[in-house]
Every structure is written in C-alpha cells, then in structure tokens.
Image 1: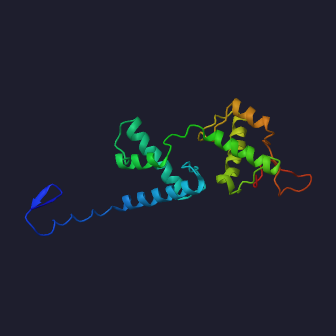
Image 2: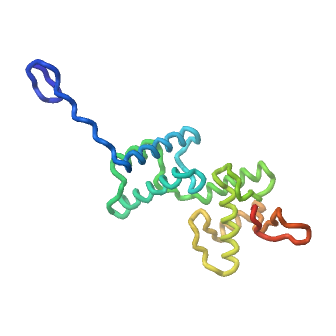
Amino acid sequence: QQQHDGATTIGGPPPPLPPPQKLTKQELTWNQRFQELVDYKIKHGHCDVPDVGSGKLSTWVSVQRTAWKNRFWKGEKSSMSDERHTKLQNLGFRFEIKNQWETRFQQLLEYKAHHGHTRVPQHYKLQNNLGMWVKGQRAAYRHLKSGASVKTSNHHKLDTDRIQKLNDIGFEWVVKSRRSTAGSATSGGNNY
C-alpha cells in the first residue's frame, strides 16, 4: 500500500493531479501588473508608484487602493481578495498614501538644489512628472487667489501652510513663458 495526499492506493502510480485552473483575463492582467510593480520596486526601492507618469501601472495601483478601501473600510464587495491583499502586503505596498504632497515638495527641493530654481518645465519627465505637479500648484494658487474653491486632488491641494512652505523656498507662483518676447511677457506660460 502507498499513501498519496491522504488517499491510500494499492500499488501503481499516484492518482493524477487535477488540471490547473485557467485564469480569467482579469486575473492574467492583475498578475501582469503585479509583476510590473515587483519590477518597479526592484528599480526604485519602493512601491509608491506616482499618480501620473507610469502608464497603466499608475492606474492599476490606484485601482488596488480603491479596492482595498472598498473592502476593508467600507465593507463592500471588492476585487481585493485575501490572496491579492497578502501578495501586495508582502511586497511592501502601501495601501494608504497620506502625504503625497510632502513627497512632491521634497522632490521640488531636490530639483532646486540641482538646478538653482523652482521653474520645473511642464514636461520634465524625471521625478515622475514633477513639472505637472508644479503646474498644478500654480493653478491651485491662482484659483485660491481668485476666491474660487479649490477642488483638486490631495497632491495639488493648497492650504496656507503649504503656500508658506513653497514661499520659504522661493517658489515662483507666476513664471514668464519662454515663448514670450521682450516687453510682452506672459504669466503661467505653456512651458512651466
């Protein structure tokens, strides 16, 4: 007699294994994006994929955070299974990003230390599209100054403390477009 997986057989080979389950398209996509996140962590040392600049991975990460919130905060049905939660958690994925603004501010400080100013070009690709964040800060400031309520995402949201921090480093709220000619400078141009 031989023992196989708790079943006793008399001689012969063990019973065949059940065929592997076919993964759905959604499961294959999830596994593909998870592998992209693993690769991102290897390259960058963390799983904090920025909101913009990382293509489909940015969107996927956002969806994972939303699915997590729906399941664990709201108790709603969600695509965040226990297995997915564990895989992400074991990778070091942060389900809550509390201080994206501070992260961007630190990147701006690094940019200023290297370049000597805060006029990050709008299409500056390094530091995960820092130029777009800077543009967002200026737009939020203009809205705030005009008396309009600022309804932007948290990483663009400005309050008096953030405005002061930016002022303290010499942030330029209005910049002249490089396309302007002498004597006809425009503010908030297309390049910054």
